[in-house]
Length: 223
Image (cartoon, rainbow, N blue to C red):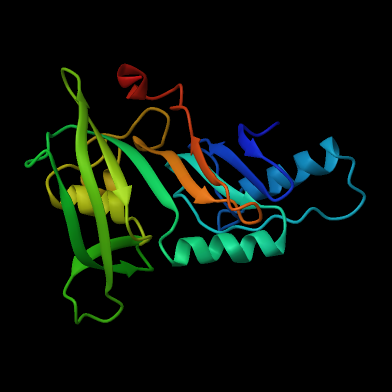
């Protein structure tokens, strides 16, 4: 199947990841999004050899939205550097049941990943494996039952948006792992990588790419 391509040139391909997709292969053995894209490009462009695809960042499987892949190793190196230096801006939208108090703010926590549980926890600065996680959030819309938050990710820690919003009493809709009481019918959580802004690895142009909301989620209420 053709991926939902948001942007593509000779160096980058940005797609709108579906909730069911995994960014790269894992222990489930399910076909990963990078393999699907490689297969699509190989057929579309009639490529005789292997298709290269670099993975500079990741999105959790139950999360939808904009994900960047690179089509050359040089582009991968430069995009990796942009992420490392904090020059790439990633905006997420999250649906929560409880209205945050205050309605906007900055969250900074030291968090630690538990590999066996595939879950992160807030911990002390001196704990083994502790990493600083930072984000900014603000309330941008409300319905009768839910609230839409915009989150600007300042670090790229494991499950940090899910954990940090839960820590202020706002677990993301459908996220059983971090305290929401019910799952979503589509099996995902109501967290969407809404946009990404990054410097193009060869032209230096600033790319601002927005990913439409998934059609099978309550995000439609806020569209």
